[in-house]
Length: 98
Length: 93
Image 1: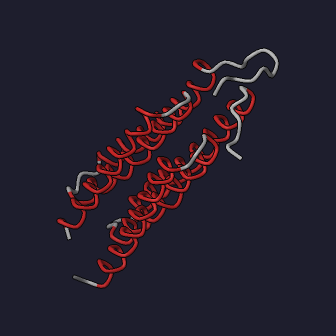
Image 2 (image 1 turned 45 degrees about the vertical axis):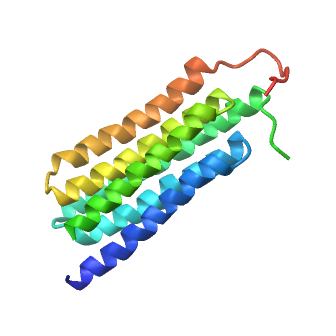
């Protein structure tokens, strides 16, 4: 187990924890808006940490570039999609829970 | 090391199944769409992990395409399934 494995294991575990928190948030939060908030956490940070964990293990720079590209795409897609859904939910009159 | 990757991928899969509960119970259509968003991201993470363990670079392209499709489904949902209602009348939920 070379040191880069340890770093990767720690990053991957943290990523898994954020994914778990995103799912718990999706289940526990009272309304659409707060669930969106929890969901994008799982997207951005959870996937980001997993990608970082994999980047540490990656062999070539090409793989590193592709992994970061995937993460950036999910970042932008998740952010814009949640914005769209929240705006439309607001227009359709879904009330916030408080 | 490989066992760790598989266990993490399995944990993410369990995460996915727990997320299914929101699909069943979600009061509004948007909640079910959120679960689909969570699926998209979780499957991308699982694919990347499997690509790393099985040394199969093609899986990374699959993850990329999946991320694209997840984005498109969200936009399609908002534009098609959930059109803008005239005026601001309140929904029951």
